[in-house]
Image (cartoon, rainbow, N blue to C red; front, side, top):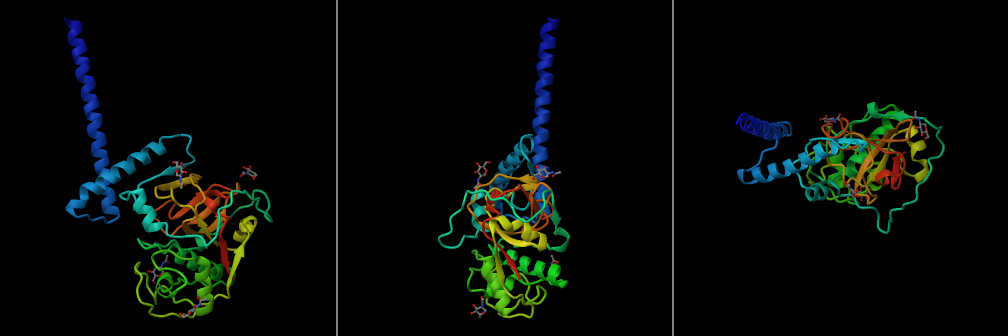
Length: 309
Ligand SMILES: *[C@@H]1O[C@H](CO)[C@@H](O)[C@H](O)[C@H]1NC(C)=O
Ligand SMILES: *[C@@H]1O[C@H](CO)[C@@H](O)[C@H](O)[C@H]1NC(C)=O
Ligand SMILES: *[C@@H]1O[C@H](CO)[C@@H](O)[C@H](O)[C@H]1NC(C)=O
Ligand SMILES: *[C@@H]1O[C@H](CO)[C@@H](O)[C@H](O)[C@H]1NC(C)=O
């Protein structure tokens, strides 16, 4: 009799604990979701709410599972992309396409012209910006390269206009992707407006001013084996496969192929040769807008690199 009661009591206790734990995790996800909506000012129609919440919950479960895996070298987290499907993320943000005929190369190259365990970090000399939901990574990469050239080589701190390139540079396709090298050439030939004079809207509009007063002299291609040495001088425009970057939070990222689809900046490297990358997805993404990318040709980072001169 006593034994039966004890067993029944124990079963009740266990199911109560299970119930409390489930309740807690449901409440916790709700809290994280509400916090996410508030932080990123997400407003959905009532028809969309359940759909977005469903995607958020799936992505959040992936984030927790990834972070619980001790074999991972990087951590993931909630950011402005957590309510998007992978297909939406790729279609909106990963708009870069390599030049016609370009093929990814699997060959790993050794970086030349730098001492072992050397490191450089230009993070405090560059601006993290936000391209919004416009596929203008190419313009942010180009403007970043020109700004870094002026700041570090010429001692001139310019905050330049990506929107001018989105609207006026006919060699690229506005919010549907484009080419950092051609955009740097555009600035060299026609000049850049300041960001204050030609502000970012995140949609392609008519060209309001094709020329500007800030002009570099041209663009220069960086060899695969020369990326580290080039970064030692000043930050470089690079292209990467960012297919798995949406939920990156911190640590050394390495989970990628080499199908280049995004343009960013390489702004340093650590003593182990890991790259410091500047993205254009605001400071809410990654390490305050930056990423540590594993040394070598990770995500194809050494393959299409240029600098402003
Ligand atoms: C400079 O601007 C003109 C007029 O918009 C354009 O035709 C030309 O292609 C631009 N130069 C470069 C190098 O993009
Ligand atoms: C660049 O300039 C614009 C316009 O003045 C300003 O709103 C923005 O905050 C600046 N961006 C950065 C990252 O400094
Ligand atoms: C994304 O990550 C998965 C593993 O999580 C990997 O198998 C895949 O190759 C990666 N995809 C790309 C395009 O980098
Ligand atoms: C120094 O460089 C070697 C070879 O690249 C690397 O294996 C090692 O981890 C580096 N040491 C430090 C302290 O980063």
